[in-house]
Image (cartoon, rainbow, N blue to C red; front, side):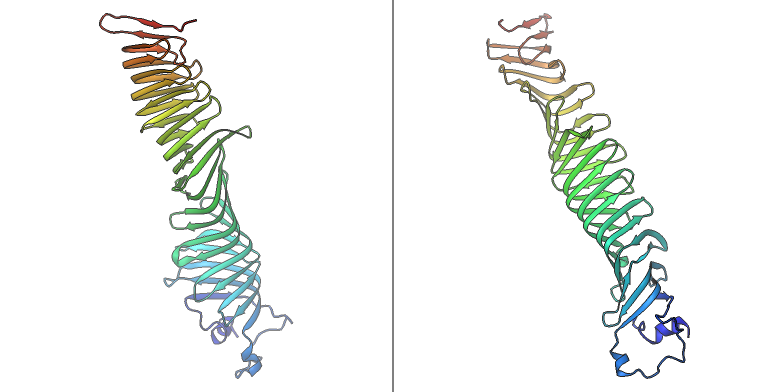
Length: 384
């Protein structure tokens, strides 16, 4: 008898829109024929709800006739009551619009007829064939009608650029969008960066990470964290190594000892620059110098920070304050250049002066005020 007839006349009659191609090897190496089939099963045979098959190849197609998956197994059991095929050491492919998109394998699995889904368990392995991302976990669920792949328990994802882990992940296969949930850690290589959050969206085709939950981003050099960012939401562009920090954003550097805060910042980890289109505060911790402005740009390579609009500079140690339209701060020399409506104040000795330009050091060593109608230069030196 043809294998197709055995399935149609017996166990697989309820199967709709699914094609199962089975290569059977009987346990006693006997051949299945029409002669040894019983037309009227005995009660004992009717009570049997499980059939064991060897060397099984399972395929399912959509209503349109496109293949949804192909799974091969050395041994499988068909549970007629549950209408589930139980497979051992399954390997196969997942398809979308007739194209193979994932290769899969696991220790065991279940192929569901009615629900049209696959459930794999135990040392699950899956590879995204387009983006070359290797996925691992303890459980995998494929829902082709929803274009959804779910991996649970000790989930990891890895390719040449990133290594990530989470409690679980959902992959929307049409647009290659991966959503990671629970204790998410994503490590980016070159430069080395760790992203830590509770929910992270990976747009694999675009090479971007998005998060609308609190996130920390760690820059690692020579196995040490040299800078760290925090925000309530973030985006990270893998192609340009730029982090976009939104809401309560903060970046802390160990060298120089800086803390930069704003509601929105872009941090270029490759070029070591920071830009903020919203009011920004810069704190130089060691000298206790605070700088504020409506917008700001920092260049960590050249150790400068530029602020513009309602700029305020405060030297907390010596009670000095500088107001201006624009200011450039030099971290290495702890000095500044200010332009536009410059006002300088200090407490000891009391002084209040203003002019179009000024340069000096807020910690009180010296300030030079220049310009004005008479081009007066005011030099301020501390009392030695």
